[in-house]
Length: 144
Image (cartoon, rainbow, N blue to C red; front, side, top):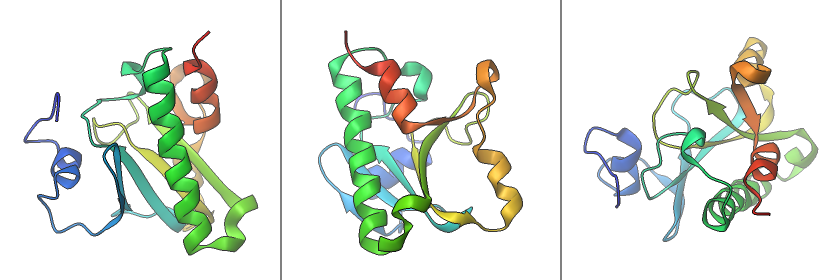
């Protein structure tokens, strides 16, 4: 794994070096339940390759395809596990400095937030960062 660090917990999960149960695994991404869920269902989809944050992504086909695949996997998992959540789901990324782990990860949330106040962690703060919806990130990454 290019750029992987032994101290990165998500790199360890991607290498199956932890007891974390994987919900999905392929050659590009793995998915698992968030250890501190903020919603009815809260999954994380991470790339196998170590990419620190959304700020390390560029407007190029490779990054656009990766984020699109992450979103497809997240949607598939929520549709499989909580089929009624389609209109009550959110998908997105925390932006620095508000990201908790320096390894790119897509939050896949089947609402409602539990407890309700946790929605505060998933708000956009405009130029200050905060949470960026996956579709908005894809718009920024779409090659011209």
